[in-house]
Amino acid sequence: MKMYEVNAKCGHVGMNYFTVKTFAVMTESRKEAAAQVRAFPRVKHDRKDAIISVDEIDLDRYMEIRENNRLDPYFICTTVQQQRALCRIERYREVERTQVKRIEEQTGRSTYYNKKVIRNAKKYMNNYIDLERYVG
Image 1 (cartoon, rainbow, N blue to C red):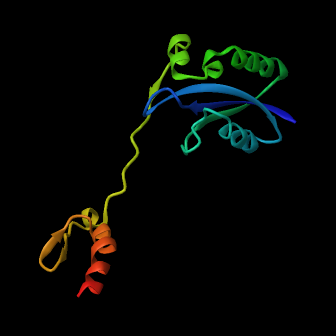
Image 2 (image 1 turned 45 degrees about the horizontal axis):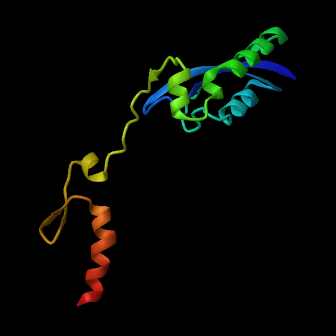
Image 3 (image 1 turned 90 degrees about the horizontal axis):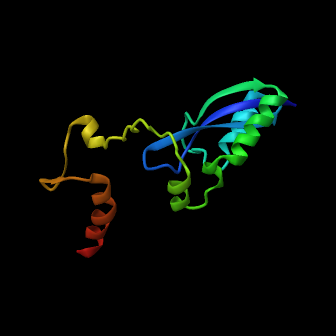
């Protein structure tokens, strides 16, 4: 088994913010090390770029990282109040995710129903059109 140092983006430091933490793991490959760290608590699981780097290390560095993480207040805290009181965390702002545009905005055309402009066509069709068929 090889030892790896994995730098990952961790959360719980504010909306749209992250902090970079280093983890030490023993696995067979870099890919397994990245997958294992992604499953750790406080690591941003949903981010595609959550794993920043994976480097092979020796036993001394492995033990040093484990000891640093054991004493790090960020990993010891259980509440937000403890984190604010104990931790001095360097935070970074996440890049805003692009929002998926609605079909009407992408094509630039409006949706009409009986000469009436519909703002949210999908919602309107699901909730109102089927009801009108059975009313009369």
